[in-house]
Amino acid sequence: MAKPLYEGSKIELTPTIARHYDRIMNTISFGKYDRFIRRAILDMEISEDDEILDLGCGTGKNAALMADHIGESGRITGIDLSPVMEKRFLEKHAGDQRIEFQKQRIDIPFSIKKQFDKVLLSFVIHGFPHDVRKRILENATASLKKGGKLMILDFAEFDMEEMPWHHRLVFKKVECIYAFDYIEKDWKEILGSHGYENFKEQHYFRNYARLLSAEKK
Image (cartoon, rainbow, N blue to C red; front, side, top):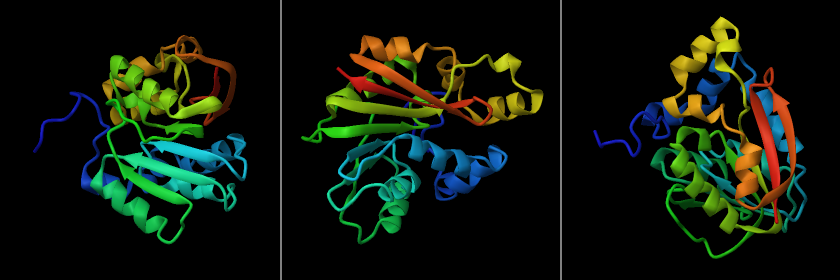
């Protein structure tokens, strides 16, 4: 087995988990995953002509939901490293010329030679060490048009010890060590230091999940 990119992280899913990722997420969220993902996509306020970059796009579930809101001139680009996720993504969007996939690590500098109206990070950035998160934010920022919006759909800020015991048990069992650090950070302050303003947030799943949007200055 290859050495993981980051010790203690769970961003590199096994092929079995990757194939059944959406089903697993719905199970561990007590059936609420699908519902709040759909709500979050609505809250992104996608326009018909939006060009959207989905960093760490996974199976393409989010891209499928976003595709319902873009028109013929809209575009979605998904980026992921996993071959299994690539296969699932391409199967899901075969024939849709508005949606494309690029196999690429999001935690190292890259350039895709265009800029987007929106960049989405959905339940991915929490799985990295904090210094690596900064590199991911730099990639996201470089990929956004001026005035474009960064959308982080991930855990909200909360005190894990105040969670009901059964939620805390699942969180500690399922999540990686970096998630425990992620929920303690002030992400508005962090994004502000990366050149973002005009923050807006929506909460889901008993306020444990959040869509945080910010505009690139």
